[in-house]
Amino acid sequence: MVYWTNYSLDTDIVRYWRIGALDFWMRRTDEEWLYVWRHRADAEPTSDSHSMPNPEMPAEPEWHRAVTRSASLTVKFSPLMPDRTVIANPRNPLKLLPGTTVQFYAIIPVFLGVSVLGAHGEERVCEIPTRMLTNTWLGDMFAGKLCYTLPSDLYHYPDKVTQGPTDAICPVRLRNIADDPFIVEKFGIFADMMNLYHRTDVPVAGLWTGESRTDFTREKQLNISVSETRPMPSTNRVLLSRARKANFDSIWKKGISLLDKISNY
Image 1 (cartoon, helix red, strand yellow):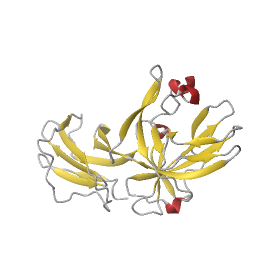
Image 2 (cartoon, helix red, strand yellow; image 1 turned 30 degrees about the vertical axis):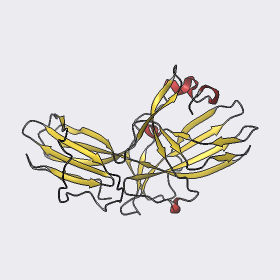
Image 3 (tube, one colour; image 1 turned 90 degrees about the vertical axis):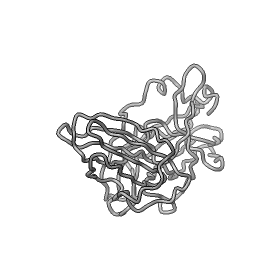
Image 4 (cartoon, rainbow, N blue to C red; image 1 turned 90 degrees about the horizontal axis):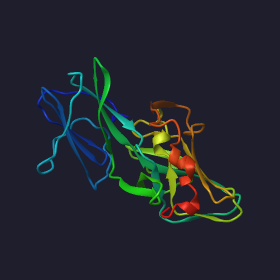
């Protein structure tokens, strides 16, 4: 798990990291932090994130700037769950017959969190998706929320999942408790309400989340929830980051998950 570690930087020297499909540059001046990134179509994973020979930077990079209270030159790289709900799109629709329950495993790319460690504790400088994510609006013109959409293969067994070091395996339980078949073309995962864990018996990858649960009810309602009771098959785990949100937001409670009210779900 050498992606997620601490680094000591020097003033006015640009450092570069390749983290999965993410290129990341950072520089500390006397007054502030500068950073820039890009996503590559080549998603071949690297074994670690320590500084590599600096490739050509983007033409005329637009440096992002941040000021921290601490003048420390030590930065911490940590994995974070996405900051929004993720709408997963399986390659092929799935029909759930009445009374059926199925367990799948999906992949969610994590965010890179970069923090400065100093006298004022951990100061978060930036959060960047390690893979390009597409924005989507879930809901109608009156009620909804901005989400990420992500093509996602579904695997019946976790050992069949192709997992890179910046990918988290997410257990997904789908259940049809209605009287009619339910066609699953896409489903929501409350990624921002999930803890992120690491399997200590997996050296490089091994990121896992809590379980996403979706029930299709007799009232033709989608009930989506998160469970932390079975986040992974191994007990050798450590908690890397806690869920961004502890409770479901009011928009979902008011019925955004009602199937007949979601015009583009």
